Image (cartoon, rainbow over all chains, first blue to last red; front, side):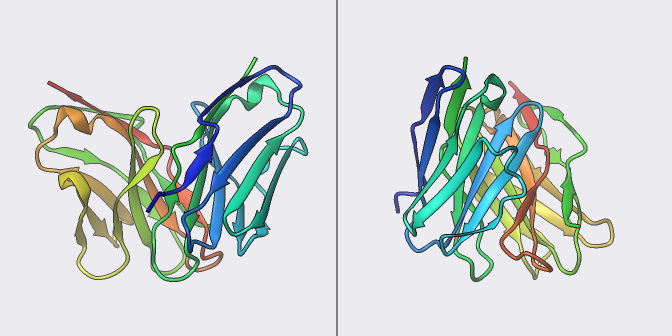
Length: 114
Length: 115
């Protein structure tokens, strides 16, 4: 099993630029999560999808953030325009929606906005 | 509302000594509880979980955790710490009473194991 795959692993961009983070969940997992991790705020849930439909986006910080899941094997998190305070590690995670399974995380996308 | 608390930002222990990383939870109904570990520059990795059954659950890398319903705690333990155990540890609870897919994570505890 390849695990949750995220790209890019590292991104440095200038303030005002658009940033797109990508995620491929584990095959067969139909729930997908986007988390953000910072020193100040810890691990925050931004949004999650079930069967490609956004279920809870209450953690999305502002309208500058948007997420899509066009199919079961791909999701994007977009920041437009980016700001220095968006600098963080963004994690994607997935889980089957049935049973008592745990959640599996990708290795993260390390974003720096200068 | 579901939540977990990790009261210690950091735990320091000498190699070879036992370690405990604390976690308390607040849930409606029966809890599904988890521990994860994050090594530097890596994602979170699953260590162990409690769903039902024996209160003492064993997980990866020699870790175990004890579920205590009366104290609403789920402390992570290891009899003999290794320097390689130094990492960030997260406790989590899965919402089974409301939104089944939502996980609530604690703030994390940094474990430092000194040689």
